[in-house]
Amino acid sequence: MNRPIRVLVGKPGLDGHDRGAKVIARALRDAGMEVIYTGLRLTPEQIVQAAIQEDVDVVALSILSGAHNHLLPKVVDLLKSEEVYDEVLVICGGVIPEEDIPVLKEKGIAGVFTPGTPTQVTIDFIKENLKR
Amino acid sequence: MELVERLLKGDKRAAARLITMVENNDPAVIAMLSEIYKYTGKAEVIGITGPPGSGKSTLTDKLTKLLRKQNKKVGIIAVDPTSPFTGGSILGDRIRMSDLNTDPGVFIRSMGTRGHLGGLALATLGAVKILDAYGLDYIFIETVGVGQSEVDIVKAADTVLMVMVPGLGDDIQAIKAGIMEIGDVFAINKADREGADRTKTEIEMMLDFNEGDWRPPVKKVVAIHNEGVETLLESIQRHRTYLEDTGELIERRSKNSEREILDLAQHSLMKKMVGTEEDKYEIKVFAEKVAKRKMDPYTISNEIVEKITNKKD
Image (tube, rainbow over all chains, first blue to last red; front, side):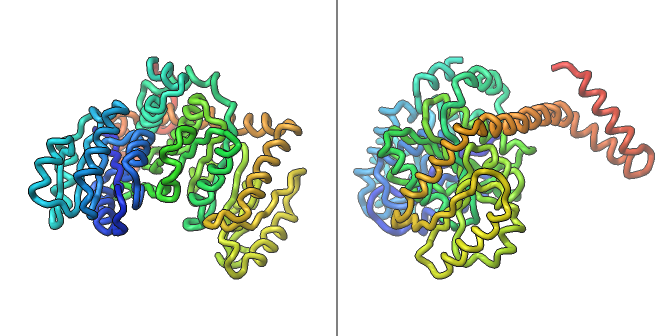
């Protein structure tokens, strides 16, 4: 592929801490990707509309608040109802309890990266799992 | 051409995909752009530039919200730099515009400057046309005012808004950057800070040397608190009326089109010259011979030009 991978990095929900999101944004940038950083406190609707306008390959969500089981599947559902889910890889990172990971994957979050994951693992995962 | 049809019907995803194709230099996009060209020219294009951190995105956000109250549809193309080392970038202009994400009358697109051979201006202008045909009334192009191609982009707008902030240095900075010539409207943002009046006076003094009938207004604003934004929008709209009334709009657009034609022609010539790896290799071989004084660069470049002007697609 001779075009840069475009990734939306965003934080759904109300937690006010985006250190992790910024670290991953920077790592993806250094891996040659175009990162659209959308900032804190976004609703799933805002994230999905931004993803459509930016025509991204990946939506990467960071969440620490514990609301992941509610907010992340909502992003997937909205992407589906906008008919773009088939082209967009959805991944997430943050504080996610082990037992919730299979549930999230079941609901369409392709990759879940918990604290301590080397950024290279995430980068490789994106490159290997792009949908288009 | 299915994408074009969808775009003309106002399909957001088609607009987004076409912009991606323009950015990626997709060979199929040229035909699509020429197809939509006749539907463009209706939108008012406003270039916004100024130093990093001067508040361009915040101001764009506030201006857009005002225009939405006037029932106008708005597009925003926000350009941020691409790292020349990794090709990656962090495009962060949307952070200041989160509330606009879900407004169906607003379309925001972030673009990296990428590394393409003078292609940034072409990609941006392509995106403007796509959003114009998509049916927007106003299109903002927001870019950091550094580098020739960024300045070229804002110059391609109908109205250029220059965003300044107090305390950036003495008035020599303003002349040095050559920005006095391209601004049609000036905003001094963060005007609640010390030195705003002095900055305003300095800009006004520099503008005294400008010739022409339009005297660029200099407006103090505090974008984050939404102060002075309404007056600023009035100035922008007044400039538009001026352009239309005096016939300068078509003059300005002709000038921009002239540059665009030449840029496009230059771009396709470059593609013919160094479009393939083979071509690039050939030039390298010549370069080595030139360096060793076995050939001279004058003859070689002439031969290359002759060869590509005879080359058929």
